[in-house]
Image 1 (cartoon, rainbow, N blue to C red):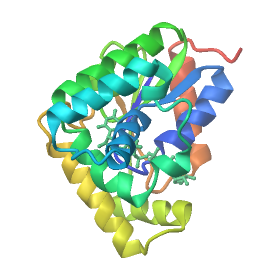
Image 2 (tube, rainbow, N blue to C red):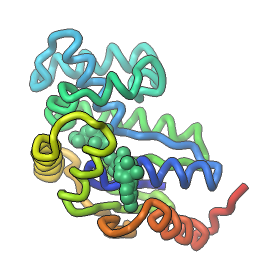
Image 3 (cartoon, rainbow, N blue to C red):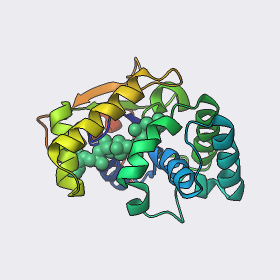
Image 4 (cartoon, rainbow, N blue to C red):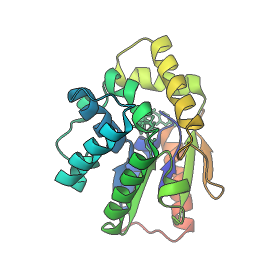
Length: 213
Ligand code: CDP
Ligand code: CDP
């Protein structure tokens, strides 16, 4: 299953609840781009230096798939700093790097029969034939307010500016921009509670024959 959408649309919250309810594995693909942004900062690599970023990706991915996917070693605190947030869009622009992350996501999914993968290009590029695709969105003001409540760092205006900047970068990049797949189910979560979002998604899961184990 693919879940895409802009920052703070509620992808992680809803996907985790669905994964638990239906006994599916869950992967947050944004962690891979954040791992690379974090390592670039730590190793003083300019995130716009494509050759250096590809070498970094090969080094991290060469250690293990789990490491590149941010499944071990890195805490969410490390990957969700303001600094990482500032450079992750530049990292995510690099087409060849995206190909490597995509291949790693596919390799992970091959070993996880029932899975939910969340991100920006999951239903469009990574798993175009996913059995079920969702595109979650919400107004930018609502999304910024959610992030402020969640992270307790930065003022509303600062967080709003960051969300707008990342939306713009994700929507306008040449390589795998953020798009709703034609066959994705759109859910605008602006005025919905988490329970309501999860309910709608669960109904669609049952429609395609997914059962609670
Ligand atoms: O949680 P949040 O929505 O704030 O971000 P994330 O999912 O951790 O993703 C961080 C950044 O990675 C996004 O702003 C995108 O630029 C990039 N990303 C991407 O390009 N493709 C994906 N499949 C996932 C994330
Ligand atoms: O993964 P993504 O960046 O799309 O969003 P998230 O990390 O799940 O953050 C969404 C935040 O908004 C969480 O604190 C949720 O509790 C809250 N929220 C939501 O996810 N869905 C709603 N319908 C309402 C609030």
